[in-house]
Image (cartoon, rainbow, N blue to C red; front, side, top):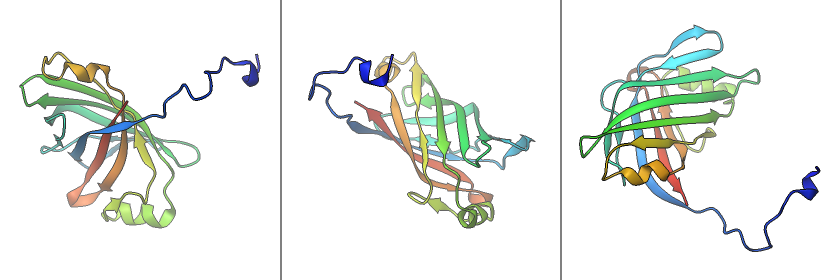
Length: 166
């Protein structure tokens, strides 16, 4: 089967993808540990928040594993727990990619300078799971996240804007 023989929808029948603001994610981070030369593991410090159409606090257990690829790009694997404003738990998982940063910005980042979007291409794809009646609709959401800022050092954190894909 060639690509040209794949079924195609009738012209004009696919609506363009739309997004709607879902939440911001702010996660203060501890310094990473490095189980190997190509793997970094981050854990959050207290104070992580998820405000927006979803209102939650990031709690333990939560972890962020970053695999450095042969070309220097990084693949992200996050598992996060959050407590929603109704007291229920929210499980968030996402993968993503941080395109290889240029050497100058990577050096600044490692020295503790905050890197703001759009300097780095860093995109994630969150999915959600909860037993909350108030937030049950999240179980049907595929989200897309884009970097707002990231920093190491005393103010270490990562912040994303999360958008619901419609």
